[in-house]
Length: 125
Image (cartoon, rainbow, N blue to C red):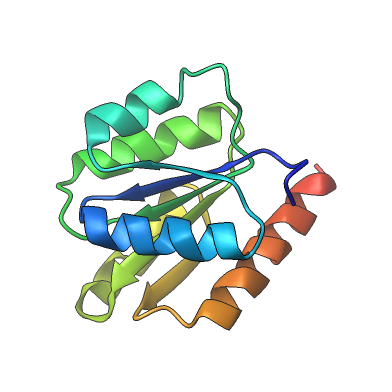
């Protein structure tokens, strides 16, 4: 996977972001982690392209959706992660370009399968 573009890992909770980055690294993925909407938006203008963005919406306000919309504009696939009690936002995730919406706590096997599926879907575009 190292020849593929890195994954943008967005999580307000730094510890959750670090855990996901560590897991992704152990699976052979490179990732870039950010914890604020400002850093999220700045990263979209970096010279590094991203093959996928995983955005944990927990702790962010509604501006997170505007940043997610920007991913579609630059053709970066989006996976949204949300807490179980926020399942009302599932539909909103899809409205803002998510190809997958996952509920916490994440099942790591399902996460890796979803990453692979999103990558495969986007190879054909």
